[in-house]
Image (cartoon, rainbow, N blue to C red; front, side):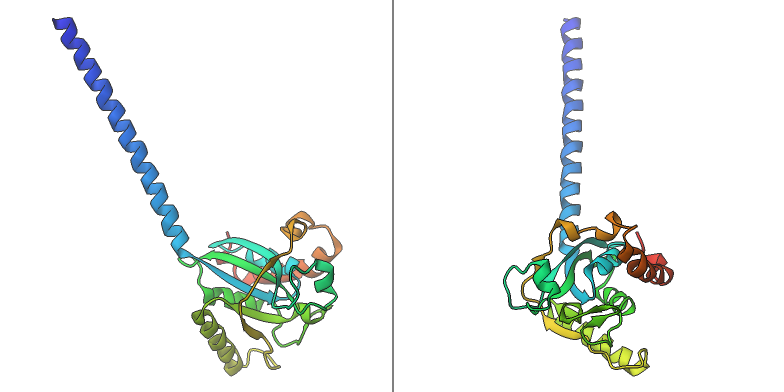
Amino acid sequence: MKLIRHRNKKETMKNKNTFILIFIFLSLNLFAQKNEENMNDNLSTATFGNGCFWCTEAIFQQLKGVVSVIPGYTGGAVKNPSYKEVCNGTTGHAEAIQITYDSNIISYRELLDIFFYTHDPTTLNRQGADIGTQYRSAIFYHTENQKSDAELMIAQLESEGVYDNKIVTEITAFDVYYDAGDYHKNYYNNNKNQGYCRAVINPKLDKFVKKYSTKLK
């Protein structure tokens, strides 16, 4: 009888431990799901056109709170444009980046601040040697709040006289976005020794890193 009781006691303890392990596993699973749901609730999208997307992707993907940066095309009339068509300036599209970010970590206004700092918003259809409507300065807003923030920031920059010339940045409602494809993703990271990266992107990155070092991943 003592042996049976001893075995029953061991079985009870084993079942209890199994129950505790299952409870812990389910609790951790639920916690992870809740965290993922909360993160998804905080995710927002920003779409900017501010010159060659090889440059702009390299800048924004370094920021804390930025989940992804997708180079692509928006603001034009032709469906599914190719890179060559956009570069010819015949489709009306701007080279752009679409940013997914955690608004609990970085705000849209902070992204706008970096947007204006890292390109020249006063040159019409041009960024440095990159010339054409595809390189225009543009903000494609997803919400009325984004539109309002963009307008307020431009007004503030103008009133403070930050630039010698008038800001010509286009503020347009977002419509459709075309992914530029794998070749253009992580272009700078994959081609750092390429001539364009060294001559054009590196100086922009150096300027950006110097000012926003505390916001980098």
